[in-house]
Image (cartoon, rainbow, N blue to C red):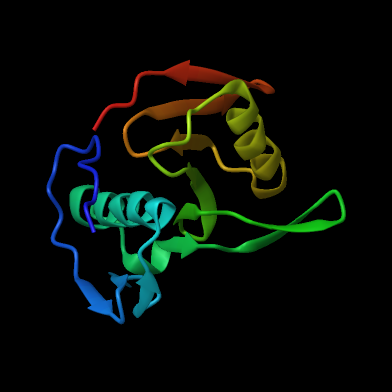
Length: 144
């Protein structure tokens, strides 16, 4: 499997294995092997980024949490908490998915339930960073 090089400063040490022509990646947070999809490749970069680069405890990272939104169940990709409070909500897309206003609206809707101070929308190649302030999002360049 040819994995794309994503737009992260660091090269992380991922554990990857194959089984019957399928690829799996080890998830540090859930302590299990997950099928290596393009979206999972992006999500695991963010897990390693927050854990190794930003020093976040694995217990402060919440993956694929279910939320209720307009009477439907959705799953958030990654939530970084600080003392159990939602700090950063990350929505991961596969590298081939273009980040648009529509994909940003998706994470903004999820955040209306979560209430994180910051959100990151990422396809691994492009990262959109926004901070929620005074009832609207303020965009700024993503700083590693």
